[in-house]
Amino acid sequence: MPGGQDVFRILRNMGDRGLLARFPALLMGRAKAWSFQQPNEAEDKRRYGDEQRDAVLRARRPRTPRTPWRSLMWTSDTPIRRW
Image 1 (cartoon, one colour):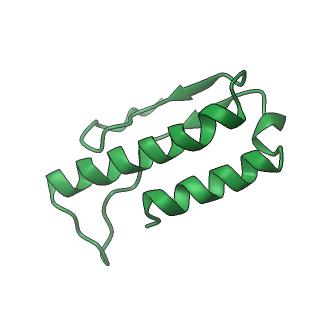
Image 2: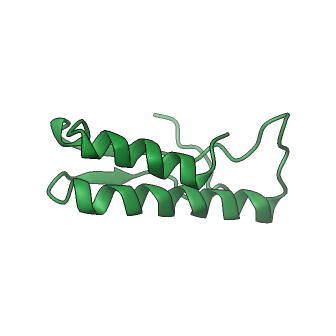
C-alpha cells in the first residue's frame, strides 16, 4: 500500500507531463487501508485514507484546475456502494 508521499509524487509527475489534463474528468475512490501485510485498526485506516486524500488534492489542484473530478467514498469506514 503506497504512502501519501508516493501517491503525491506519482500524480504530480503525471500532471507535470500533461497526462492528467488529457482526461475529461478524474474519479477517485476509497483508498485501500488494510492488507494482510499491514492490518490497520479503525483509527489507522482513517488516518491512512486522510493522507491519501490530501496527497491527491495537493497534486491535483495546481495541475488540473479545470478538470472536473469526483470523489467517491473518501473515508475508510464508508461502506462500498454496489451498482
